[in-house]
Image (tube, rainbow, N blue to C red; front, side, top):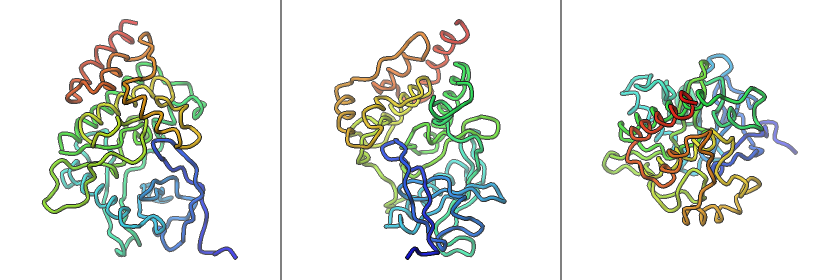
Length: 308
C-alpha cells in the first residue's frame, strides 16, 4: 500500500552535466514549512530546491533520502562560500551572484533539515534560454550572448578574488533574474582555496563522471574553471554541450568524451559567428585568469558585433 505521507515528484537531476528526469519520493516531514511537493522544482545529488509560494525565495534543503553525510556538508559548504562573497551580509559584492539570505541548521525552529534561503530568479537557467529545444522565444542575439558571457566572467572573477573555485561552471548554474541578467549559483562542488585548519568540507579531487565542462583528471582550480568557461561559451553559441551526442541517453559514453579531451580533440568552431579564439584558448587552458578572458572577449565582440 502506498504511504500517504510520501509523494513521488518528477525532478530534473543533473549527472555529468546532462539533465535526467527522476521520480523522487519526498516525505512530507522533510519538506520546509509552507512547501508542498509541487513547489519542488529541481535538485541534485545532495539537495532539493523549492520556491516558497508566499515569500518567492528559493529554499535549498538536504533531503532525507540523500543525506548520507555529504548532503549536509554540501549545504554548509555553500553557506561558508556565500558568507565569503557577501562579506557577512545578505548581498554579494557582485551583481551577478545569487544572494543568500541565511543558513538554517537541521532541526532549527524554522526548517527540519539544513536549509539555505536564496534569491529567486524567475527567468530560469541560461541553459534553457539558449537551447533550441527548450525555448519558443527568439534565440538571443550575438550582442546578448556577449553580455551574458561578460556577466558570467565577472561573477567567476569575483569569487576567485574571494578565494573560491566555483567547481561546476555550466549554463544550468547561470540563472536569469527578472531583468534577464546573470546570477551565478550552486556552490555545492566548490573549493575554498584557503580553508580553515582542520576543515574536511572542501573537495579537491576530480568528479567521478567525465563532463563536457571539465578537462580529465585535473583537480578543481584555475585550469578547470577556464576550460569550463570555454564549454559554456560553446553551448551559448550552439545551443548544445560539446560532444553532447555522445551521452544524451545515459552516461555510458563518458569514457569516449574523456578520450577525446585527452587527445585535445574538440568540436569544430565557426569563427564567423562565435568567439572561436577565446573558446579554443579556454579549452587549451591558456588563460591564467578571467581578466585575460574578458579582454579577449572584448576583442571578439568588436570583431563579430560592432564591426559585423
